[in-house]
Length: 335
Image: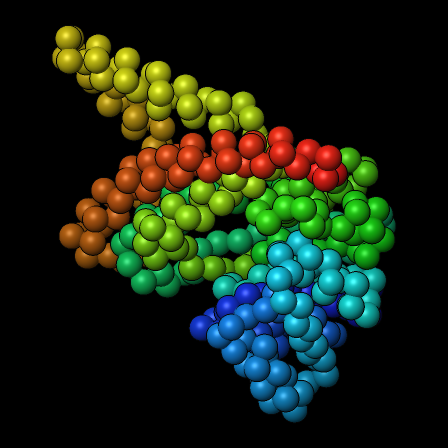
């Protein structure tokens, strides 16, 4: 039984003083508590390690979970995760991130499939915080995050906000790719797939997180994601299609609409089709949107195209530097 198998929960952090206690408290409140929590700090300057140690001294009175914090200045996300896994005591590893709040049955649900023969990797899921603070964040969640019924389990590549695997699977995949600073979990997932591991789909293992609170922060996030795509040589066709859409199709469509106004209706229709999924999530799946006052609802509706365009432009700016990095460092790239 999975309940009899000890589980290590690992994460890596950097300057998370404003939110680290949230994830730690949600870990200790689990219906199936972790046997240990191993955290690697990448050299925080805001006192994060001190807060973790203080929390550990207090939490030690509340239950059997052991909490370890290792400080490795300069470690990137992959290096931090690998170091945490290496330091972990157990074969069963669950991974999450700072900045999230875990559902109370997250670990119980995430580890349950390991009771089945042959399961070595389990893909959990994530949602936005059920109480986002603004129409902007509600629109952000609807624009960038899929919902469960959009997922094809056989193709889903889990975020390391919510994933579990055996140590032997991690070793077979070569660990997280330490040459990557972003998109490292996608490359790790793909390496697991390449080694023949199938992922048990467990959408009830939920990690909740708050979307970015400003367009500037969102731009920076998606720029880095796209730069990581370029470094890892991921999603070339998808990025090429984005350049074609914004660089060719959109300008030609606007020019045609000026000459023949009726074509403008087709152009608007195409834009709405592009936004269909975000608006579907916003109107029918987002509880927070339903609770907004009418002016705030209007604001959320108007934010959706702005957020989508900002994300697309950030990706278009980030992908070429990633490709350039890959060309310069190709001899060191292993994925």
